Length: 399
Image (tube, rainbow, N blue to C red; front, side, top):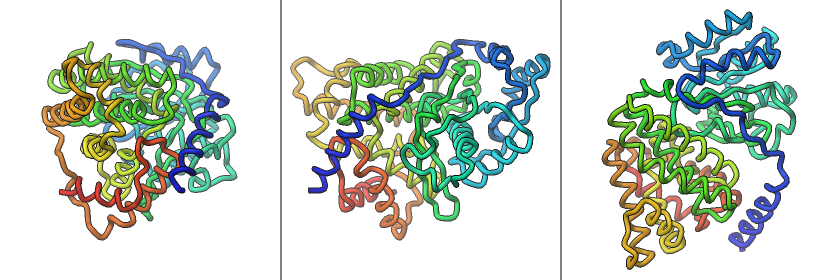
């Protein structure tokens, strides 16, 4: 009976998605496109901005040119560089206080998924000062316009520059959850591959597989549309053609450009077609052990796909055909297995482990409870997994 309820819930949501006020960010694309941003801000009549980033990005001095150009155009700015991986409520509130105290007019999120998520959550709190972060948890609790938000990704994976979600961590309870509202989709996004050239290989790998996970989970789910189907296929092709090159030869500008495109399209796909159980499990690992989200997804994805069994043979066989690893005579099951093996092969080439270390058995029941609550009934997964099945998956991925 629960499965029937969940499927009805998902179908209702899929229908409702057609009536949401979607927007695509206005893009500044290509090598050196960050240089166009200060004039864009000037043209918008914005006089003071809050830049949200993290200390590692600040140390790399990737923002220096942008900040100098803002100065030259008479645009004031403040920099909040205390965002932490898996942004916490405390860091969000700290950045929000800085924004309000200095009467800022716009937000620039500069970095990976964490600064972008932090900036989105700050925007949500500015739009809804009457609501705390926990009160904004879930779907469509913001429902008001946020300040102009400009996303400048420095990694190629999260797709946060295209999504309606901000993922937040409660550092006291170790709970990791999303605030989701179309108002949180950034208004502008800068896809400048020059910003990713210094990305360490390990981060290139994990974030790249994150983009792949977004596309695969969107593609195999039951809320696909013609657009999300096409975006997902394009992402899968881009990742398999470019990720290893970006990992092994980080200066390859074409590979970096293509991975940024893959991340962006993956974000567009999953924000409309949703993700699945790999993400639900990954979020608990981030909340409990601070496992980087991309790395968690990379490890978990093959296990989840294998666990789904025959329910994913058709879509995975299509993706296997797409990347050219099958024969026309191969049965669907074999094609699907070949696709899963190709993910494992890519993970090995990227030095991504095949298990998660440090999982404490005492934590598994609570992680299962939270993963189940995240996935069900919302995620339109191929197979709705109960707590017993999710528990089995945790033990499969546990080192």
